[in-house]
Image 1 (cartoon, rainbow, N blue to C red):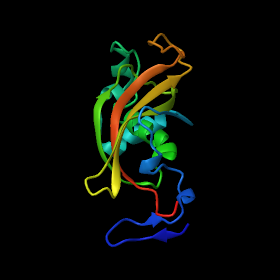
Image 2: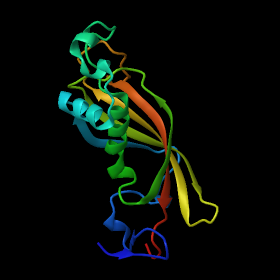
Image 3: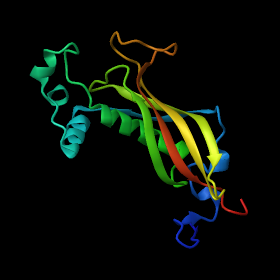
Image 4: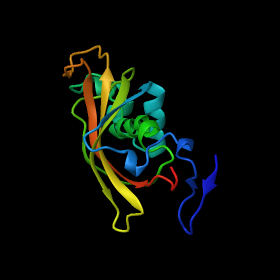
Length: 180
């Protein structure tokens, strides 16, 4: 991959085809991007995430404790669900084409996630505007994570999936390199 730098800017590819993510001009407000990559969450995934973040909530880690709750079993850490949804969305949205994530807002977890659930994500572009210097763009997406093929009685969408996490993700996106 060839890279160009300008002053204190981050390195930028000189050919837009070098990056799988989208540049500012490639986002269309109202567009929904369905992300093909999926991930089945294992007990080990949840345990490692809790260990790495020092979150020792017994609802995530203690089977006996969780069995006595209304859920009846351990739940996947909600921050892992959020992080996984971001990760699933990156290849088709921002892989290598953004300067930074600016914020995550309006996070909701309408249904629980359990060990063995398989998640997919989709992003809907809700806003796109140039920065004040017009050198980059700010893009906001509504990211939604779904459990596909649920094996229980959680509320399902019209597609038979379970919405388990949704949030606004705002990014500072690079513009297309000149000449592309």
